[in-house]
Image (cartoon, rainbow, N blue to C red; front, side, top):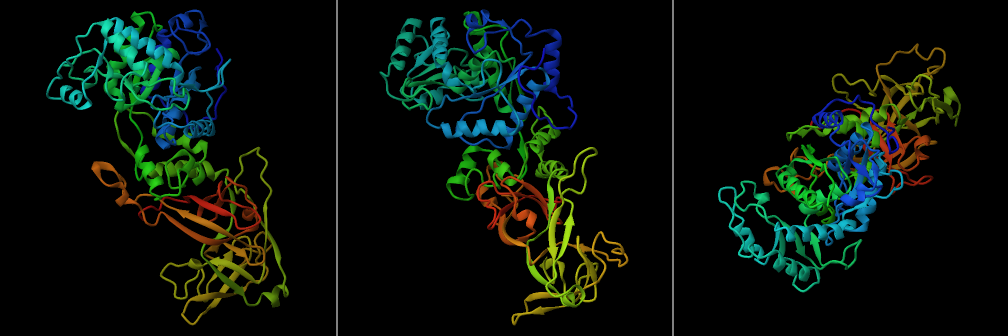
Length: 602
C-alpha cells in the first residue's frame, strides 16, 4: 500500500531502531490492527463497521492543547509521531485537545497548524485535509458517560473539592468511598442530566468513574470525568456548561480516530491503566471498535539552558523578560524559526537524540550542532564587520590611482555538491578605506597574535595583502583609524597573488559600498544549565547578556537579503535576516543563529 499522506522532508541521518519502532514492527508482523476498518472520518463502532479496511497501516496522533505556543519539546513529539507514520505507511492525525475552554484560543490553534506545516509535516488524507478537534466529540463523550452511569461505572459526587482531596488518600493511605458513591444508576443519571442542563453551580459536583478507592495507583481512585464550568468554548460556544476531563477525553479521542499507537511522554504512564480500563468498558458496551489503541510512553525532552513549561514561558512573555513568544531566545518553534533554525535541523536533532524510556538531559550544544550541520552546505557566505574601525591604506592613491575602486568577487558557497549548479558569486569593491573588526588590530600584540599590528602583513580576504604601519587615536586614547599600506599585485585570484606569504586573512567591508545593519547577538537565555530544577526560581538564572545589539557594516550582498534568508558571516557565525523587523534598502536586521563553533563557557 502506498503511504496515504504525502511524503515529508526527512532528515538524511539513517533511521536507528528504537523501542517505539520495535513495537510498531511487532504489531505489523503479527497483524494486531489488520482487521481495523475506517469509515473516512472519526466515529463510534457502528460508524467504522460500515467502512472499508483501513488503508493506513498505522495511525498515530499529535494532540496539543491550544493554550500556548509549541516549543522544542513539542517539536520532538511532532517528529516522532509524524515521522513514524510516514516511515510505516500510516497517517498521523493533528488533533486539538480543546477540552479546557478557559485557556484555549484560535490564536494558538493557528500557530500550531503553522508550526507543524513549517516543520515539514502534513496530516491530510483522502477526503479530509483539516485537523481534528476533541470538541467535535463532545456529544459522544457525553453519550459514553451516560453509558458508564447506566452500567454502574460512574456516579455524581457532590463533595467539595477539599473533601475529595482528603478522602482520596495518598501513597501511604487508601482512599475513602464518597458518601454519594452508592447512588443508583437512575439517581446518578438524573443528577448528571441536571448538570448538563445548567441547574447547578460551577464546581458544586463532578461525575466520577467508579473504580477502586484503595488502588495503589492513585489515578484509579475514582477519577473525575466531567466537571461543571460555564465558559464560552472557541469551537462550541455556549452549547455546553459541563466539560470532560482530559484523562477521560484523551483515550476516547484516540479510539474514535482509530489510532493504533498512542505515543505520549512518561508523565502519562500512571494514567495508562485508566486509559485501558475506560476503553475496555466502552468496547464491551459496543460503543467503540476493537482492538483499542495502545498507549506507550517515552521520555520527554530535557534540554539544558531551556525551560519548556508553558506557564513559565508565558511568565517570561507577560513579565516582558523577552520580546514576545517569537523572541529568538525562546525555545518556542516560532522563536527558533526567527532565530534561524530550519525544519531540517530540528528533524535532524529529533532523530539524533533518539527515543528512550528514561529521562536524561540533552546538552543544548547538540541542537546547535544540528543547525550548523544543516546550514554549512546551504547558507550563503558574506562578510560583516560587527565592531567596525576604519582601516586606511595610505599608499592606495599612489599605487592604484586616486579614488579607484577595485571590483572583487567571492563565491556565495565555497563547496557545492557534485552535479549542483553553484549560485552566482558575490560582488563588492575595495578602495582606499575599508572597515575591519576592531579585534583584528592590536597596537601591542599578545603572544601568538597573527592579525594586524605594526609591521605585520595580513590578507584582506578576497582582496589584497596589506602591511600595518600604525594607528590614529583620539584625545581619549581610543583608536579611530588603523593605518596600512597595500602590497601591489597581491589581489586574490590573480597571477602572483601568493608570492607574498602571510599568516592570517581578515574579513572587511569597503567603505564605498558597505551598508549599515542592525545585528542582534543572541546567546542562551539562561546561565544555569537547569534553570528550574529542584524548585529553583528560574527568573534568577536569566542571562543578562543574552542579547546585545550592534550596528555592523555588511557587504552589498547581505544588504539585499530577504526575510528568513540565512547566511554565514565569515569568521563570525550563522545569521538570519529577521522575519519580523528586517527591511531591505535601508538598515537590515540580522539575528545570530549560532556561532561557527561551540564556545559556550569557554
